Image 1 (tube, helix red, strand yellow):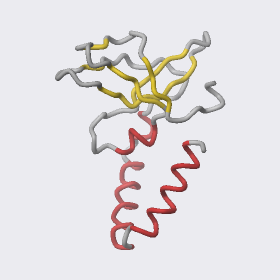
Image 2: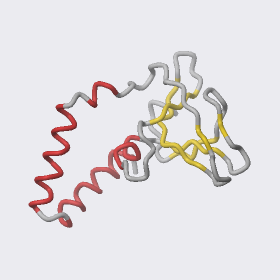
Image 3: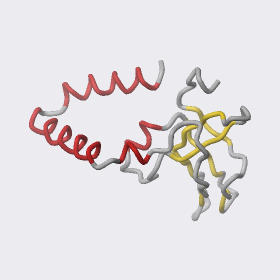
Length: 126
């Protein structure tokens, strides 16, 4: 099942669980975000990714929500989906992979090769 299919199924299931008054609040907040211009600030697939570091402060495995894509040369690249806060579900919904900083590495520098646990395998990438 593709990520788009999973998201559609989640939306359908949520519609039955979330009370209508709360749905109105959520829809208003979503529309406010769209009007804020946040979608125009997302780096499109294929554009150079801003460099990011993945820090491991306490010896645990750390995951970063990323979008894996191929650059102009055909090499695989990853860029973060934005905030990595545990409460930021939009960055998880946008991700097609999780970049992993292993337990024994204190900091994964920008540009380093990383293992990525794929959440979705979009045909345009693979």
